[in-house]
Image (cartoon, helix red, strand yellow):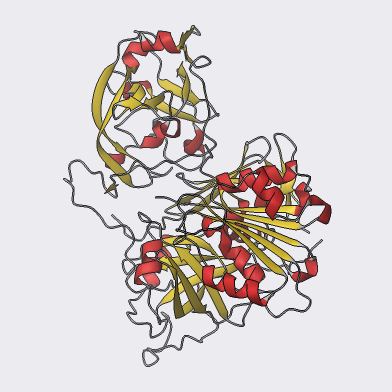
Length: 251
Length: 254
Length: 85
């Protein structure tokens, strides 16, 4: 059984934006410096709280995108057009601005190298974020845990961490990535072009004989479809962990 | 209306604290503590013992903007939306029209039940109303088609005090009978010229536009006339028993 | 068509406030059907006037959180037990 440090009660911390990264036209990485941050494990998330001048508050949860690095906390935020918070975080927030964080949160959807492998990661859309923290935690690790990542995205432009993953798959023999673009594909695309199904999973993922640790993250439909196919293919339910993403909170 | 209201449920600090302690910082210069010496107006961000009762303003964050709409149509604290947000406390029930029944239980204990065909044979009408959700969105001029509760009741149980509504999936809500008769409420099966979608309560939902929209129970299956009130789902979890948007009766105790 | 729900991971912050510690990996028992599993796997319906946590097996309501002007009301409905390990 993995051990996550038993943490006491969390409180809100001030976090200053130190860097912004445009991952794609609608997704932004936000690197924060958070004094008092107690560290975190890959897969965990933070609650973000924003307060307007008139006292109005809004709160959302975001997965941490990068492994522990002192007081640094990195989140990756996707713009939801009619959202209340994401347009601010993706479009308005600037270096030097301050937001409030509470975390790290999550003891279930967590992976560390001590838990072993092989590691099977399945990402639907922005569900790739916590899985990227797991992958990034293995950069330079020796030995690195053999890892397969399957990414389902709507289109080439909607892919997140595309270039970084290309570099990492070159650098890390232990990492293999399969992509499927479900709505539109660029000319010359040689990857998959349909929603994840039994055949794709049978081909692209560790077989159940290998007893991988499986992490599935994305919209509810993706998570449920993938998890049930994997169980049907013989993977133990206890070795499959899921985290659902999606619009949440009041519209 | 008080602006300092935490909209994101469970884990926000009580709103009034945020309003009392908050100062505009613009470009962040520090956290002003109420008890600090006036000379120490600037606090370094590296200050480790952060006072959680003083929320930090995030420069430029505005939240939902209030829309321009006639005040006589928008209850206090509401904003106009052009979407039709889907809110749900549980999984969407899937009920086939073959299996669908609407059951009415009168205060005399009589039970009447309609199949979908029988229900659709009741007199129905098209109507346009404004709807107001307790989560603060309002949608004006929504077009529906449905059977007035008066037609469902057919004169039954006018003496009963309350209507207890139950939905497929277990959702419940309660209303004074007076608030659903005389043209004030319907069982609606059509929205915007099309059959009501499951995510919005189809095959049929209760529609009571003059109260907060949680009273308009989706996936309606049973209407009980009762001399006694019996609190429903949201009423039991902290929301107001009546729910008049014009008096902003959102929460129990409002 | 999938429903609009997340899972207990999304309520990790709330659980932390309620229990004073990380709870998503802690086992909970549903009082309606007896199913046992980590709170992170329960169904969370957050697009609602409150946050509703439901049993992943029988969909009964385990817990509901409603933010009111005076505080957050957390109603424990069918959550029979949780085990802190």
